Length: 115
Image 1 (tube, rainbow, N blue to C red):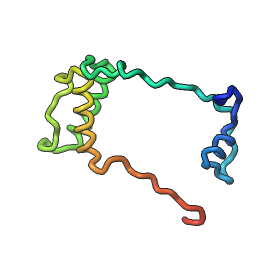
Image 2: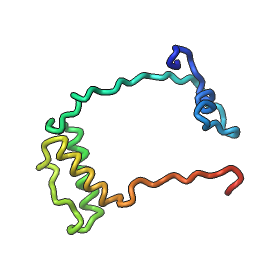
Image 3: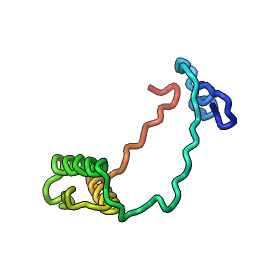
Image 4: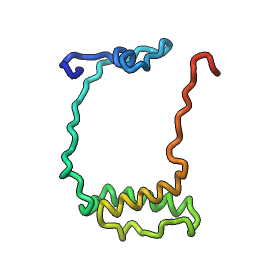
């Protein structure tokens, strides 16, 4: 259902967004729009202790760092020494910047008629 409570087909959404491909098969089913509230500013707490999910993410980042980078390019922090969300965010940003120095890849847009 859309914001007015009506059901909207995927093809109608494609047309509305300008992404309808004339050769694409129609998608089955309807789409329900779910309104997600914006979290209040009080939800951000940089001093909050990290959760087990963030701890697991730190382990994965550290593994990627040690597997892909020479010692002199590594951050040097250990996941077990990171205790707050601010420290975790700083570590993840630093390692990601070294692993992906150009940022994310930009998608190539194919114009119709090009191969």
